[in-house]
Amino acid sequence: MKILKEIISEAEKNNVAVGHFNISNIEGLHGVFNAARKLNLPLIIGASEGERDFIGIKQLVALVKSLRDEFNYPIFLNADHTYSFDRVKEAVDAGFDSVIFDGAKLSNEENIKITKQCVEYAKNINPNILIEGELGYIGTSSKILDEIPEGAEVSGDSLTKPEVAKMFVEKTGVDLIAPAVGNLHGMLKHGGNLALNIDLIKKIRTEANVPVVLHGGSGTSDDDFRKAIKAGISVVHINTELRVAYKKALQISLQEEPDEIAPYKIMKNVVLAIEKFVEDRLKLFNNL
Figure 1: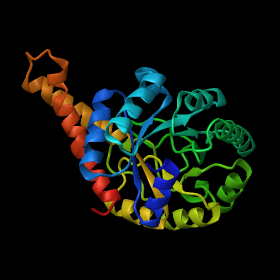
Figure 2: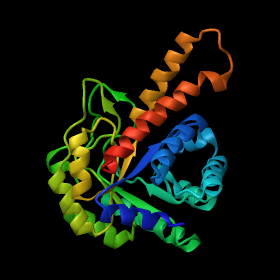
Figure 3: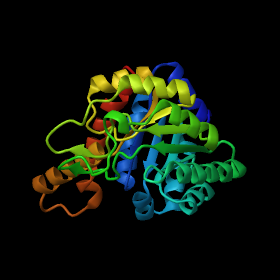
């Protein structure tokens, strides 16, 4: 089976993107995995610090690896948005396939210092583990937003500069980079998120010379996704839209069957809703 680095490289060559979907429980995992398996597409399961703590770090690794082994399937596990070296070390030691150190709110010097430390530690443990660095603060919460978070770098001169991305990669040795290119964590309540800066994505990919990851994919238009992937995005992160689909399906289940108390029956429609949403997104990311 190909390792994650090869999967991402292959996606880039084919002008498609690998879907990265966050989960908080086993229903989410089944919904996402069922969709990917139906389309026979590789998949990255993401889990933030909070999501990892809720599921259990070792339990999460065991769940994902059990699916990989049972079905001989390219499903990978990413420790999403990790804010300290100790928590990066924790994920590396547990057996994650990739880890993001998010130093976007730190100074460039501190971000480079800790990111490099994370890279050196991970590669010493397993050279196949991918470490991703983040440049540019785009908010932190996967939720419905009343307004753009204070300090979020979503437009103009605040976006990640290609020359800074190049310097960051050279000094840290990261395998992947997540820049601020008009993307935003969460979804604005009044409608779709801001448009992505497609030209900037292309320049960052050229200058940084590593695969580029789009965070905050929820709320992005289909057209922007297509253009961004063509410009150099190789991995797309989705979380907020999954949570919305989960909540809506759960509400409907409880309303339609108010006397049902079996969790696996109540959650059946939740799994199906997640599966349907992920299938649609994967088709978009892969030109299907």
